[in-house]
Image (cartoon, rainbow, N blue to C red):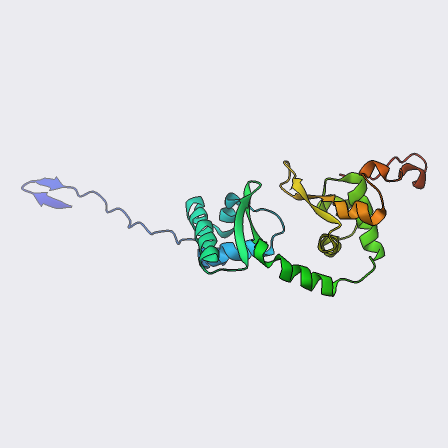
Length: 208
């Protein structure tokens, strides 16, 4: 307290200095180059991926992820890559360009064994009777992972992508004309009824 003439002068107490709260460190995914992060996600997925889900995963603004998707699409086109990026079913997915289908078919034909395994036959039966059906639904019926078996059936030309499940976004599969030809039937209604082959009280495969 100081004196001004005969009157005391009071000073306001000093406010404590504000200390900035430490920023949370960015996640490992958020620190990656954005185009590379987007490309890596597309490489491992088997269904169209929305820009929003990618943005959430790598913690980047949606606008930046959309720009990265278009940049990757343009880069693949400009470099004559065998892969192309398409926007389908409300999301983005990598595909092999149609020009390279002969190479894929030649390799698949070389690697394909003449007979289907029991697991492949069981999976094919589920798809045939419950189509269109997603990979996850087939796995639920068989109670095993069916990823490799589904790839085998796709490579054999016995099944194909039918559509996208509107509720889950998963790709659903259906049988092909080649499947009908292999069985010697003209249409799916010619398939034998499955009910007589099941225990009493069951009418078919239960699909979640």
